[in-house]
Length: 58
Image (cartoon, rainbow, N blue to C red; front, side, top):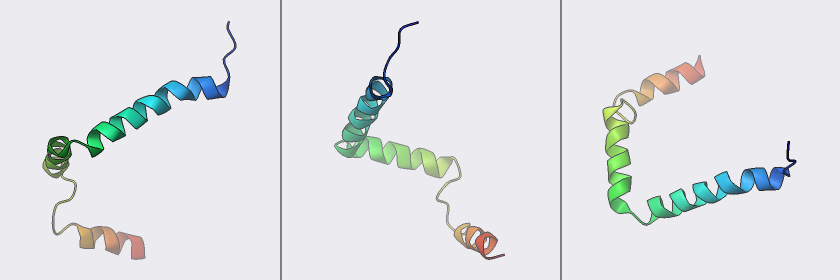
């Protein structure tokens, strides 16, 4: 088995993450699409924030 340093193991995924974040940052349509999916999935719905805050206080 070939030995690869930790730096080289992490370099590829880090570069992919950086490219993805840069693309997302410069694409307002993609941000809107992801926000719409988050709302449709149940995240960021109004009225549930109080419930989460109450759980943290108990």
